[in-house]
Image (cartoon, rainbow, N blue to C red; front, top):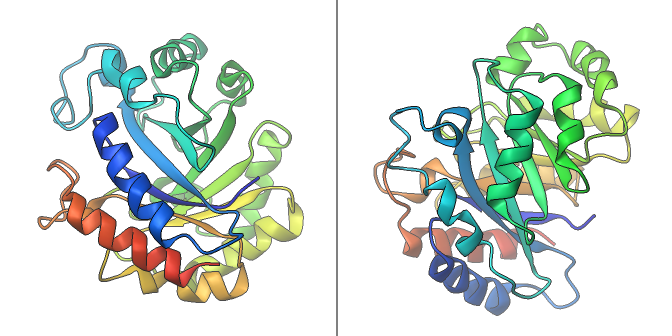
Length: 251
C-alpha cells in the first residue's frame, strides 16, 4: 500500500495531467508516494437530488473521463459523501459503475456506515473517513473509535482522520496523534491519512503526525482556493504549490 499526497475536487483530466507534471518534477528519487486524484460524489448527486454541491461536483456521467488510464504514480479515488445515512448497498454499486474501470479506491465520507455497504466496493481499496461527526459519535475517545473500527476489520484499507471534512479548518496534528497511534497499535495493517486545512501555506501543519508516522498520507481540498470554500473551483496554481511543498516535506 503506497502512501499518497492527495488533492480532492478534480473535474477534468487536463487538471490530472497538470498535477501529474508537478508530481513527477518534485517527487523524490525512489519515493513510493503516489498522487491521489480525488473526485467527489454524494448520495444526492448520484440520485439527481438538488444540492448546493451540484455545481461544485462533476456530473456523475463525466467521472470516467477524469479517471483515464495513465501511469502507476496515479491513484484514482472516488469520494462518496453521505452524512444522513441514506445510502444503500446498491447506491455504492452504482457509484462505482460511474467511476469506471480505472478507479483504484473508494473513500466513504460517512459517519460509521453499515459494513454491509462496503461489501459493494468489490476489489477497490476502501478509505473510511473518521471525521468530526464520527469522532463525536465515539465521544472523542480513541478507545471507542478502536471498538467501532472492529466492525470493519478486513474490509477497509485506510483511515482518514479529518475533522475539517472539506471545510478548510486547520488540523491540530497533536490532537489527532492519539487516534492515529491507537489505530496503528490495534490495526497495524491500516494506512493512516490526515486532512484538515492543508494548502500551500499550511502543509506544515501535518509535520507532528509525519514525524511519528513517516508513511502517512495526506489530502487537501478547501485551502486550494483563495476563498477557502469547496464550493468554488480549485486554483490549480495553488494546488501545484501545495503539491510541490508536500513532496519536499514527506519522504
